[in-house]
Image (cartoon, rainbow, N blue to C red; front, side, top):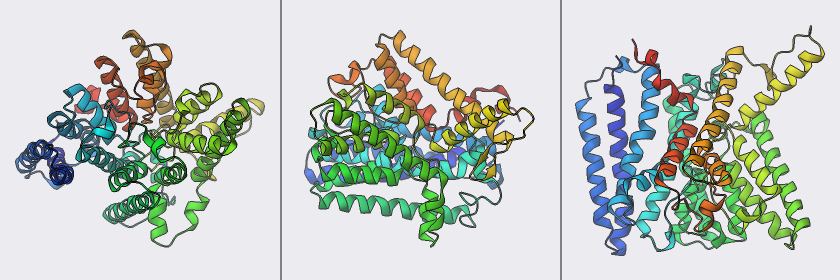
Length: 482
């Protein structure tokens, strides 16, 4: 049997940290005297109490008990259990959601998806909007840790490529994981502070600047406004796009920059490909919109840049009338949403790294057909990709496509039209948060989605965030055997 004591111990400390974070929105609402502070404090006490009990009851866990199975269980437990406590402020305080909607909102925040079931954000207590931003920030940092430390060890989706000796993307940045974690935290907070100050300078209120900064760097997409970045048209859209791009680059490159290594960022094949995809998508959609409508070039460029960056970085902000454009834009949005941003960031999707390997494998197969006797291994950045990496990659991509299809069919079975079903699952599985289709047309949120649909999207958000296989492996009987 798996020893769950180390898992419970870590989970207990995480819940205590979560309870501590709840004190910030409680203080904001207490200062505003809006009657919501006591409800958040109650949620904090419950969360802290459970966390303390878990930590105390499992304090005798041995240091050597943490193995690979424990890593899988801890990763899954964090993203399944923590949102249940993160949902308490939404249930006990305004807007007093029922559990299905509150859990959906909390999962969306912690997985940095950005999909919401709350309509009326402008009238929501300030502390509750701050809590949504804090969920994004905490989730984004946790995802960065998992992507850089856990997923390569767990061999999910070909991520073991980053553990290969001699490749400095992950394993050789710093001598110890604790040093990496400490510097990652500093970089992450620093980016949020820079974004918050910038947003304040261009005219956002302190609350809007703080929440949008956390959501931008975490690529979370929770905005304190129903109209999202439409409220900050102009400079807000340009700077928003900048910070979403910065939040979706490999965080390890920032750690290297802090340590005086500027070369790896500019030489990173994944970063270069990511920026090229953004440039191509924005350029073609801008040209298409400019030629097929009466929109001037600059607004077309600005809206295309902001919204497409929001999609490919899996953030979830929106601006202007972009969701209603349809046509060519919808095709581009779907494709770049599936691809996603860079591995090793808080962004989601298949990731550019995997897309590059898939493209390289296709080229290799074509060459093999043309020249059957030719030995042409798949290479990435000049390095040969080992067969076990390609096997894991193919399994992941296949699982991603199958999951997208199966959950889309499930959505149609509960009554959604095809477009709403497909884009709802696309949005959740890719942790994109964007809404297309009739189901979100009225409010721009998922409040009109049936409860069954909310649970399907919740499952998709968790699957997409944890790399599918990290959850699927838990249902195998062999996993639980000694």
